[in-house]
Length: 402
Image (cartoon, rainbow, N blue to C red):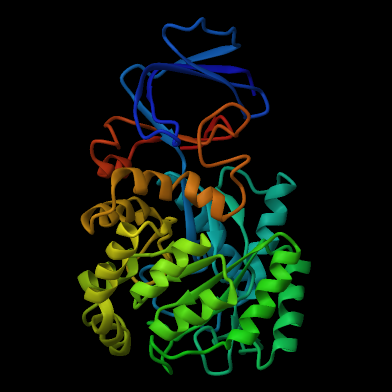
């Protein structure tokens, strides 16, 4: 690609949540930012120039919790063949880039398809999609959240069903061998599993500690699906890097997260979407579970944000009525519950990148990092809903992909 100079923009680099007017940015032929300046600085030479006068530029969105094998309009969870999982995932990866997601973390993929797609991406054989941070198959218990038959004849399972610390150690090592960069644990029941409640505790502290030990030995991360109060606490004590959902988290555990530097990925969208669109269209048990904690969930996330818990953006995309292209609405929901604009912009940028351990390359727009950015007509700092613009330009490694 030619060395390209982007000029005239209002630039929010993701570090400081301010618009630097009349900015320019030089992107090298390797897709990384070489230099940034303003109109008062001497502009460098380039092979091509793109005039972005009057536009607003911000880092591409990092979505820390997605399921690309899912379909927002198809509540089916089981009996997928590996081919179908791969097909759905590739289709949804392209949809993701169209709404501004330039990096995503898969949080459970049947047959560890996400690891295989990430390998293809690194080889240059899967282009124009977000950078994939794979987790492979999740760690669950027999009969728990994540125990779902897959394959045309039920010959596989979505999760590794572990019943001891030793079984956990083996399963984690298997996923790392396949290329996982994160391990997903099921600490509690969930909305979409028919045989448990969201406040059921599932994996034990000892089992989760083993997963954390193995992951941290390899400089990888661990996230825990944790909705009930006790299960959230167990996962935090086990040392996980992030809590996913945190629906019924206690105030004491919010403070514990602040003290330990652990992250919270709230995923407000699925709760909102089921409330808005679910009645009569999905199994009643999902609606009943969602109603049982929804109001407390939003209040708890607001409290966590106000106490300074590190919030990273994720949407749980692939769950009912929750498409990857709905991701910008998560930012709107975060603002509605009281998160500051700075918290929101950091949650989908540098804080998310730090959680995923990719902040050397992504999360902010500064020299040395990849040029993953969005070009908007309106100011996202003034109104985060500006990110929802349908025809926004999306750049990945300095190349326009949408």
